[in-house]
Image 1: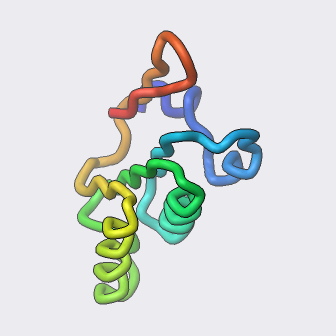
Image 2: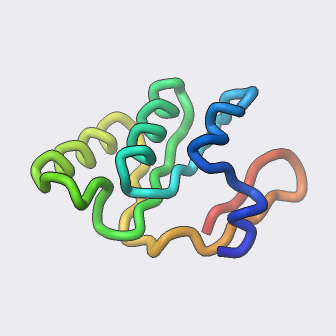
Amino acid sequence: GEGVAEHTINSDGFFDLEELPEVVVVVGAGYIAVELAGVMNALGCEVHLVVRKNMALRNFDPDIATALNNEMVKSGIHVHTNTNGVAKVTPETTGDKKTVE
């Protein structure tokens, strides 16, 4: 989507962060996205996990995927399902924040 390549990092870029962000948007439904969302949540970030379809880890065992999705929500991760991904990322005019649509 528009602005995604210019204003985001991939999972490798996580290791290059010099400061802990207040808010993190993780896009994906696989185990790397889920793990990254969990780590950032445990570190105290407000975490939003953006999933294109009905749940994270949907290709894994259905009972485990459902239980994990429920636990992520209980732990404070904001799971956004059925999003069709990210259409646009726009930086705000002041500061480091970005708007994700």
